[in-house]
Image 1 (spheres, one colour):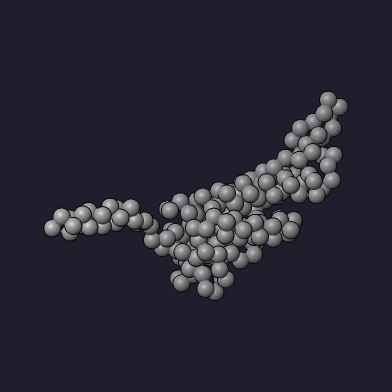
Image 2: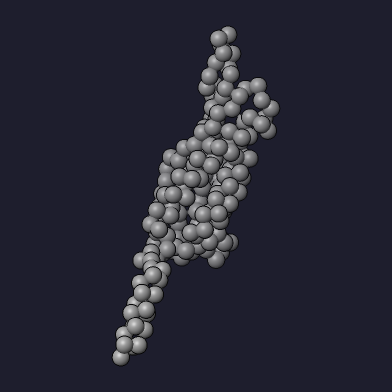
Length: 164
């Protein structure tokens, strides 16, 4: 009898430590997402391609959703670059531009693949990065573009996986 009691107690301890989750997946039970190439309302087409690539990488790294092809996915994450802006940010004493601020605004919709229902709509995701006007593009502006996109993508991942 004592042995049976000890075994039952050990069994209860192990089941109490088991993994438990009430989450059925992302919003609307979504477990996988397809990410088509982002649309673009700006004149800088390379930005939408970089946005798409970096978004796929971010979701894959996050791991809460599987990133798969669009035809097999539970939902599609549709992205669109709405605005790209490069403006002077700081000036020298001689009123020359010292730094620029690159800003990007993105709209996103998470759409259920089966019925086309919009599960989440984000209109104004904005990110920015600054760069030194004296640097070559690969060391300055390109890095600022990536920072701005990463800011948007971090917000996007956080908002779409908030139910986890």
